[in-house]
Amino acid sequence: MTTALTLTDTAFRDVVAAAVRAPSLHNSQPWRFRNRDGAIEVRADPARRLPVADPTGWALRIACGAATLNARLALAAMGLAARVQLLPDPTDPDLLARLTPTAAWQTTPAEEALFAAVERRFSHREPFYPAPVPVHARVQIIDAAHAEGAWAEILNGPAEIEVISEIVRAADAALSADSVYQGELRAWTRSERDERDGVPASAGGPVPQADDLLPRRSYGGREPSPGGDFDPDPLVVVLGTATDAPIEQLQAGIALQRVLLTVTDAGLAASMLSQPIEDPTARDNLRLALGRTDVPQMVLRVGTGRTGYPTPRRDLTEVIDKA
Ligand SMILES: Cc1cc2nc3c(=O)[nH]c(=O)nc-3n(C[C@H](O)[C@H](O)[C@H](O)COP(=O)(O)O)c2cc1C
Image (cartoon, rainbow, N blue to C red; front, side):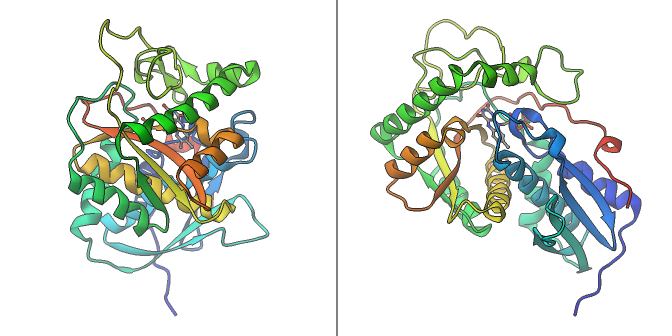
């Protein structure tokens, strides 16, 4: 039997500060945190689930899974091993993860590197430089997903990417035609950076063009520079899990974050395309195109980019619940 270690308030706040750097759909930050009975609780914030884009809570669980990995890495960086339980209490469905520090821990170099990437990671929506992603980084992406119980497939060559881009395009067209969906997206798009949530236009990348290979969402950014394709040869990664059960969606969020931090640590950048996951037909077509019987959870583009535009987060006092 392992005994929980007591976490000071300062250490708890440091862990939460790392957790909230996780990505979330439209930067909705659908999480809350509590330091209770020697454990850190990662809780859903149902008021911040996006009712139109996320009717089932999939995106909320991806985001909270990602926050859980950041918290685990923050504890490891403090020299604490933690037991992580997902959905530990059936009577408390908003309790998505509990991290119990159990013992002193010698932080590994890999944990140090991933933790250092937490602050540097951001969604990079600019075109990438035309430099191929090195083979060892591709292997690291696949290994990172596997290490957290998920899978990652890297699409090879223009023919495969063209198939996937058709699926993303169909999903994007369906969501673009939905005025309620677009209204919600606009409500989370910010023109100013001083808002503490939502996606600032400055982080949104150039306005998508009809002939872009991978249709991106429009966050009201600037017009693209004239001439040249947005990303003629992107590295596209699909991440997934064995099933679509809520616990696997949390696991997918943990794996997604490990992939994103691994990419950041390798000096690369990434952004997400979730239209083909949100649209059920597209998600099924994506699965079929990959020849898989399990479940895609996210599409990513990865490449080499300039330094970018981290998005803001709410103050910690707004996400911490009393014990
Ligand atoms: C479930 C989920 C879906 C997302 N879908 C998209 C997407 O389709 N397009 C996009 O540009 N970013 C997408 N993002 C990234 C968020 O917009 C981003 O994480 C958020 O704005 C915070 O910014 P940051 O990643 O730079 O910290 C998604 C993130 C999550 C967790």
